[in-house]
Image (cartoon, rainbow, N blue to C red):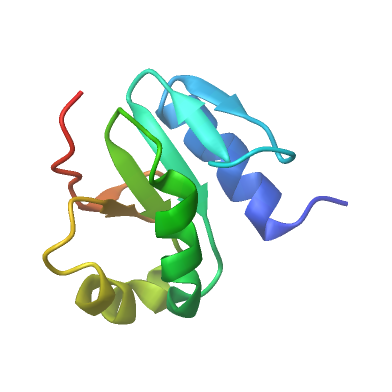
Length: 96
């Protein structure tokens, strides 16, 4: 049985034209950007650390229930926010 994290990461890998590798960070590296999938907004500092080396647009993937808290934490930061279905909630302003 796969977890919601794995299901979300696999779907996001398709949306971002990349691959999901559970053993490495960020979870998804694709042509359209990198995504670190988390389950709560409290994990954003860890996600930002894992995305720090990315040279492409970077996103944190969170469930919709965490978006309000996440948007407050990501205010003024170049990292974007996507939901588990790949919809961009906050665009990444990192340059390609």
